[in-house]
Length: 289
Image (cartoon, rainbow, N blue to C red; front, top):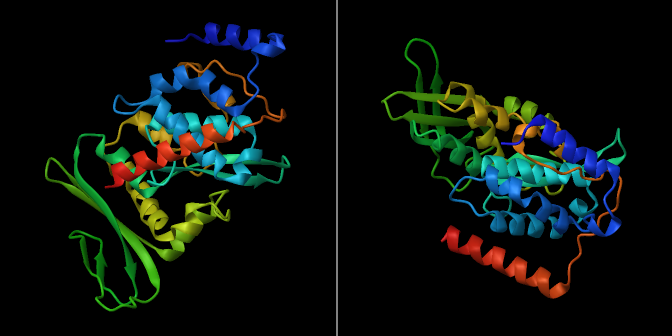
């Protein structure tokens, strides 16, 4: 485990200026420099090479991310590593570009997806099952609190279920207990408005609203679930102010000072780009099936 003094020494060496040839010039080189720390943070079932490949594919296929502040981008990738979530088509987490008008730059925001929240909750080992559903105005829906809480939902079989009115989440614990929460659309919208990247073309709030609505209710229920303090703290960065690589604590063992203003190239030879993209998409397809 790295000590604070080791971190300071390493950062001092970086600031002192290594020879120009030793400094990373591409984003991929910065990612490789950060790979050992990401490998230590990842759960045993995940591979750091796969995570880096998926992250690079996401960046290359999202034009605005190519112009994003490098520190915020690397911080978002590290956040994905620490939570053991994969960015990309599976919807575990997202790397979303947004305009920081105060700083006049584009930054990267880390957003956990619905499937990612489900996965994190299940890792506690105390949850038997957890799920969420959207509710529409033509559904049969009853929701009561009090001494005898009740939740009944019978989705309409009609082609048009009407307007979206809210979402609920249910968690069944292995000890026989359970927890459920319902959130109306108005409350979901309030939480959406707190996400800096909500209006982005690439935001899951734009492309997968129902999934994000369900995820929002699960996150609202989070404090009542048997989740470790560590994961609770990590999830606090979701859709918030974002996490720069400079915000990561010494315990995270990241010895990297990413440039804030330098222009970093992420373009690699075309054959390498195609190989990585094809490999990542094939692995996504296999897992989906």
